[in-house]
Image (tube, rainbow, N blue to C red; front, side, top):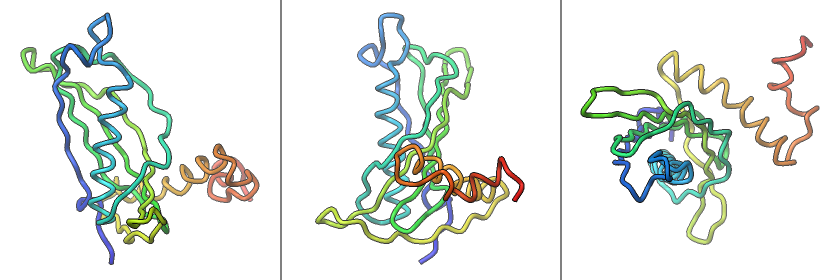
Length: 170
């Protein structure tokens, strides 16, 4: 079975309440990561039609604080499927409804592995990108995966052919 990124597109909204904030009335980073993990898992499950577990979280940088009362919108979709795993990209938007402002706060990639009821990994459907953006994200996913594997000690840097191609003309 082959699926398109739009099949996994997920939008999740949250209202930043006092219990979600630090003493400066900014959203706590851990709370945002939790919400992002949920949105990404839903997206991955839509693609895989299976239970998925979080395998990795790429670098998440906070571009600006999210304030008490803001509405958070997390947009997630699968960017590439490998044998038993999928990469999910997320964009996080913070909206202050009274002022009418909406700013991009974060972006990140999470990786999920599909598992059966016994927790054993299982194959996932292929992904066929359609738009220019989807094709670009799909192509970059292999390099991002190789970097993740190197950082996790599961791949030697010399074996990361796609990643090396960015730095060396061979």
